[in-house]
Length: 395
Image (cartoon, rainbow, N blue to C red; front, side, top):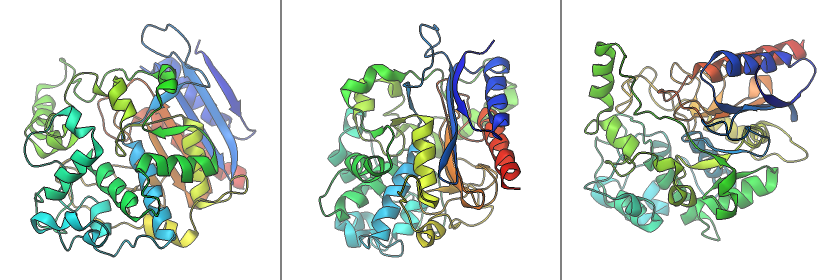
């Protein structure tokens, strides 16, 4: 019998059913799911255990690191700056960040940067984890790095670097020059409510459920042909391997369970939060949530419009990926809730997105990582149930 808690509004019971089935019939350890519909919270569930030892339950107040689901929150911060006239998607990055013009990057636009087209998925040369966790060091290194391709001719997943690049843009144009983590805390979380940090205070550390497993956990019994392909395209010297580890800096086992990694600001990968906070924020990008709306419809339309060429293979992930202005949009790699969805998945399973056509914000978080970057079947089962419920209650 699955151990779970939470609430589900009438008409949304199929999400609870899918959540319980995940807990009982998959390798789920601890997880949470939340849905907002028309500005109201209609699903808020949590269940399983805090860690593999089952030392305590996965509870309402559990916090979870969500890897690249972080990128969507950073994209919202950028969109807020655009809406306030501080940034333009069409302007050159170097207009706001002059040092970025080094190594032939002077004409790169904000849109190209946000849609992973600048060829900066890692830095030139070796870099340590300590250096990567220092904001001024990593942003200076990225400003000096030569693009891996002619900007605008290709796109490839900037798994870690996206956050520092986008975050430095926010810091440069913000009148108070706040860090990305502070900007998010004050302008998003402080406005909408919830619990979410990019740069976790030490006082919250004990609430964080540790990540279990990881992308490097390739099963020994995997089909040899499939295993060889994974190692070829995601090995340490491949673009994908370099992007995901920053030339090995984050290659140490358990890096994202470390206190120093939680405390740093890694706006592509270390947001620590919970499902209702993520779903609430996404709901507030597309509609009114308790009197608050984060983005105007026109800004949302710009942000969720596909920028990368349709069916263009991702230079780092090999398969085609679909990017708008920092968000992934609906596509084969990012199914979300169907056409119109925008948000971001996180390595191992987490995901958060908004679907304006259904007036819905959705989020799923978990501690047991699958070996995939997106389209986790647990999350997909939940999101499909949520879309079905949204359709039914709208009739």
